[in-house]
Image (cartoon, rainbow, N blue to C red; front, top):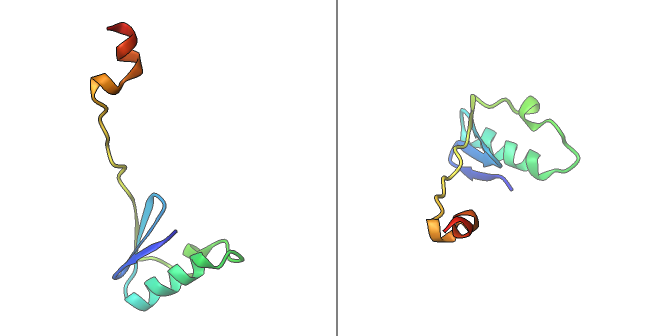
Length: 70
């Protein structure tokens, strides 16, 4: 599910940046249309960046491997 924030569009693990909000909205509409497969070829983003994954650190008590060793 793509989320538009101004001229940026987040889709999965990528963030697409567009020159204006109309292009960003057109890209979101394109992604919503299941019959279109290459939205980034039709509506060219200015840049694309990889979304950084949220890092979660499990507490040692939550780690089953740690419990087995303890």
